[in-house]
Amino acid sequence: MGGTLHYLSNLLLGGGSSSSSKKKKKQFNTVELKVRMDCDGCELKVRNTLATMKGVQSVEINRKQQKVTVQGMVETQRVLRRAQSTGKRAELWPYVPYTNPYVAPPAAYDKKAPPGHVRRVDAVLPVSPGQEERLATLFSDDNPNACAVM
Image 1 (cartoon, rainbow, N blue to C red):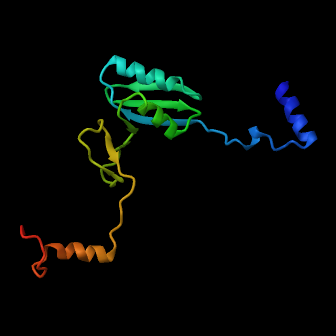
Image 2: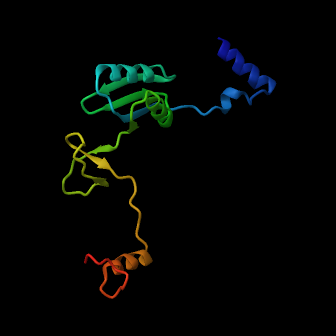
Image 3: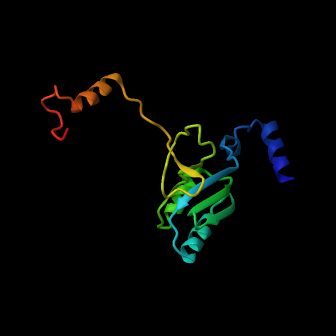
């Protein structure tokens, strides 16, 4: 009832620029983190820290994969900072599922990746033509400053 009354008073009195309408609405988000956890105490500390965040609906922890999944109305960077505040090494989940062996995914193999996953590679820097030539002449016999190993 109070929300309706507040809305109508703002609409009729011209106070349409309330602070609640300027706020950016958070969307439901799923954040996956890789957090280094060794024991039940570490797991409990991370779970309690993340579960007390405003907007968090669920926290799932897989200690074998060292994976933490947080669901709710939360921002990715805030969850990451909160996980790092526990003193544990935390990063965004760096793995993607590897499904088709015939299509080269934008990923790299990693021995530490869980079964069926490969490490995600976000961006590969393109090599400019001038830089490519410089790299080619680095081991050239014509270059007096070339590497002596070759």
